[in-house]
Amino acid sequence: MHTPLSLPFPVRDATALSEDGTPLGKLPEWDLSDLYAAPDAPELKRDLDWLEEACRSFATDYEGKLGNLDADGFLDCVIRNERIQSVAGRIMSYAGLRYYQLTTAGDRAKFMSDMQDKVTTYTTPLVFFTLELNRLPDHYLDTLFAENAALGRYKPVFDRIRAMKPYQLSDELERFLHDLGVVGDAWERLFDETIAGLRFYVGEDELNIESTLTLLTDYNRDTRESAAREIARVLSDNLRTFARVHNTQAKEKEVMDRWRGMPNPQMSRHLSNHVEPEVVEALRNAVVAAYPRLSHRYYELKRKWLGLDRMQVWDRNAPLPSEDQRVVGWDEARETVMGAYGGFSPKMADIAEPFFDKGWIDAAVKPGKAPGAFAHPTVTEVHPYVMLNYLGKPRDVMTLAHELGHGVHQVLAAGQGEMLSSTPLTLAETASVFGEMLTFRAMLEKAQTKAERKTMLAGKVEDMINTVVRQIAFYDFECKLHDARRSGELTPEDINALWMSVQAESLGPCFDFMEGYETFWAYIPHFIHSPFYVYAYAFGDGLVNALYAVYEEQPEGFQEKYFDMLKAGGSKHHKELLAPFGLDASDPAFWDKGLSMIEGFIDELEAMED
Image (cartoon, rainbow, N blue to C red):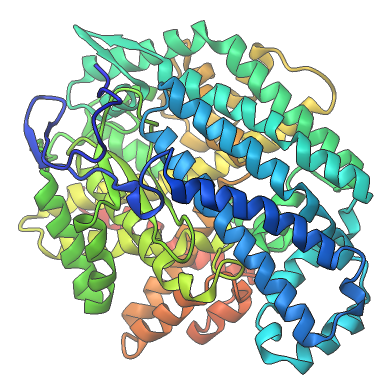
């Protein structure tokens, strides 16, 4: 039953239950009033009115005149643009977060759509800015940056904007595409609302997708199989809708890329990530080459531990027979993560503390709530918000550590301001994966027995395989899907075949694949919301493994260098950020170093078999 919309959010004194009815404690819910008190708040109307006028006056003052500004005038222009981004970001953050709390509520969906329409309409006059900027000579901008240090600070932003220069269309076409953006957003909403509205029946229970996916980690093998088959049934029943969304999104991207002259579908993601294609290719090739040494090897070990002749897809994330079956309450999860963060640096714990106490986390699983987990930075003058779907599983504790790492990163980077705080996706996973690693290492040190250590190591290896191997397999699937879409419409069966072509390769020869598993591509939101996002997870994991090796070898002074890296936000390229640690992501051997940590854990697990 949905929470009545007349009740105020948050309700922070409710005691949530795990799937088996075990109390989890008082789970926090968002208090969005730091953004706006309500959808009809006078401050929201004030900001919308301000935004409309600010965009109009910005265009009046600067369109056709950027090439005539001196350094001080250009700085004023940048600051005004940044303020517009901040106000628009605040409005859309509020609308989006409120919607994700209850995606099935019609008034919330309408409110978000209305806000998106207004913000898109109001900001259309700003389209000239990047277009005109990219027509300015390099020497003109370089001179301005050199003349004014405050303006020069923004150079990384302009470097990224100007990286798009070869792919820029006419002013008229760019304005048209800007206005058309709301249509693509509507397909994303169709996906979100379809996913949120799905109902799965396992045993006597009616579940949403998040709770059903969680059953794939259940201790009872029959329950896992039932959940897997029910996911396959429901996805198959809705497959034409999901295929339509994927076809439309991929075709829209193909049209955009063709008009812009992009050499391949991945290029726009590489540009936005500020990462060279060859670096991503080196990462992808290193991981694929390591499949036999990583996932194939590990899953063969797991097959033996589970006493199976063959692994089925519902065994991939099965708990080990020795794994602790207790539910982790919220207070214990908080204490575990905060202890690990504080053990690394009291400063890190201090930054994380308000998330728990001030309504910055929405933790409970609720009907209509968006699945998954994320940390949204909102705007730099407010604070991030973390969303979880906490069910008391050990992996949920690691998810808390992961998303809280994002939150800490976003808090630290906020000092850069709206235009420089945003971190490319490849680096955005650094603090989250590092937070997970700190939590894992702290828990591993407390392991009392060989069996406990084995279970924890195996759990970490699984997480790393899911983060590295599985995400690179996802990336290969996307590459194949977008490439195939260029030749014409893809049937659901076509997409199923592409999915299966990467699954066996990445998971290894010990797996059998049930009928219906070929549809499991349909529920993964990244393919719709952020094409080619997924390699950032593998990038982040490899980066953190290398960073953590440096931390173990040279702990003295590491914390300050680490915080400096997070504070930089998007103001520095990955080469600059990693240089103080003696690391270079453009070196192919860098990725092997990261993968060797996973391999080392598997070595230890194999040694325990003797």
